[in-house]
Amino acid sequence: MPHRQTNDLQAFGAHAPRGLLARIIAAARRAPEGWAGRRFAYFLRALGVKALRGRPADVESLGARMRLYPADNVSEKRMLFTPQYFDRQELDFLAQRITPDFVFVDVGANVGGYSLFVAARAGAAARILAIEPQPEIHERLVYNVRQNDFATVKTLECAAADCDGEVTMFLDSRNRGDSSIRIVPNFDGGRLTVRARRLADILAGEGLDRIDAMKLDCEGAEDLILEPFLRAAPRRLWPGTMIVEHMPERWSIDLPAFIEAQGYRATLRTKHNLVYERQLTE
Image 1 (cartoon, rainbow, N blue to C red):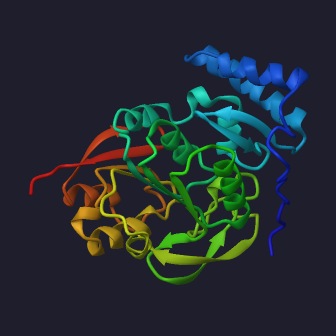
Image 2 (image 1 turned 180 degrees about the horizontal axis):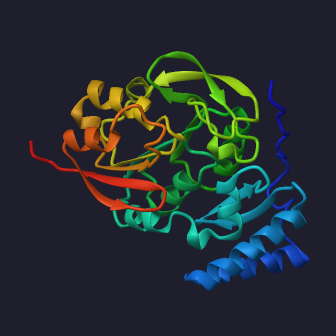
């Protein structure tokens, strides 16, 4: 069994940054784009992580209140110190499409960055489903959702996969966000048995009649999830927009070719992700 860090569930604000740490975070967040700005921000970020000594910090990031643990999760580190760089192109693209009744599915939600970003910008009629399989990370996700007045976010603790039942998750102790149901290169954090469900079954159980956008960040398991979903799900549930983590070295099929063969068009490629939009020809 991997070592499980105990999350701190005290009231929000108990870990509000103060003194030097608060100044480090503020300076890192003010850093501009460009090589020099990013180098300076990353230097400050490293100082801030050391100053925290494994503790979390309570902040607002991406429009939502969150308790973030930067020591063992790169996504949390980025959202805490440098949210201005956090998947900026992807989030800008998504923000332009958000409507008051937006339906968003976040597969591999981590601690809620994308889900809370959408919730902060959508209306009360929106529906946001955040799916995260790791118990410790899901607990952080639930905590973050509860710190905000967003009644639109529902969390599920399970792995989206190509089967129903139980699957083994391989953990990366240095970056919990890099854990996967596919064996990971830095597999040193042990393994965990988690509940798995087919994505089509998950969505059917939620009673969704459409999906405006879906994000899949599953560390190389995107093909295991997406191929059976697009083959089994009714077309009304095919997402209008998909943001898919780009990890072709771990996929067993040419996933971009498969997605495009289903009628999607690649509209954006960033350092980490591929963004697709569905072409309505019917």
